[in-house]
Length: 328
Ligand code: PBG
Image (cartoon, rainbow, N blue to C red):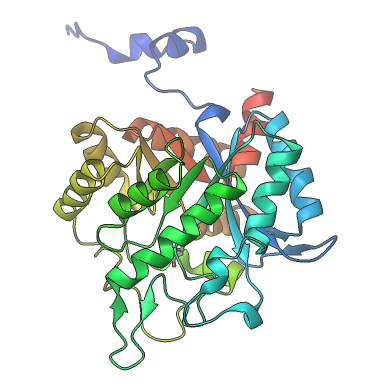
């Protein structure tokens, strides 16, 4: 029997395997999402996300220092807003004294080299729990009036020191609108990482628990994408690119690796993937039951994002992964 071509020959030893390895994972690829809450000395566990916390500013600063020391050079900040501050017009979103703006300023002051990505959407601040403004009569999410509020929010975050803004609201035309607003305000250097293909997903459940931000009524299907679609993701990508986005993001991550791959092969922009809260919860739950090996599954998962085409991965595993990468 003649087998001329034997792929196993290249897999014989770790030296060989690492020589022919096509993709690599490093802490530089990772962005750590963090939850900030008002108050002092708070570290409130998020039940559905074991190992993740709502941190008050003092503890947030410690966490940010630890991440930086591990090689994580960018965080994505999500504020937990007091129920009393939530309004139908979400005006807390552009309050320069909000917990979000104060956190951005404090991190930048303590550690100027840490990059900060601010989320642009109204849901944490809206008494309705929606990403856009709601017409009280029709229940419709209003596109164009929302853009103006998002622009105020983006400028507020840029003024506080955000390096990247991440519009996660999925309103039409927001990338171009935000780009113009930022430029007019003198923030040409601020990067827009658009949540370009953001799906109406049940995988966001634990995140909405963390922020207590679930919609009071209805769902987000009139603005977030239908999980059945992929051509639509390419259309969104083309628009965001034309409107001046610097980085395109796909969200959620794992069930959408095909979308990451398609965007990577059609766009010339860097591609990011958001390994969302529900994906984190599933791994943690199985690991806590002893059904899978926590460390190996984390590293494999993140590496697979890289293989699919993600240059950047937003993941709640960022710190653990950086620690594991350091060990190996
Ligand atoms: C808000 C926003 C959401 C997430 C990031 N920004 C939730 C949503 O759209 O309902 C989800 C992140 C996660 O699940 O980890 N616009």
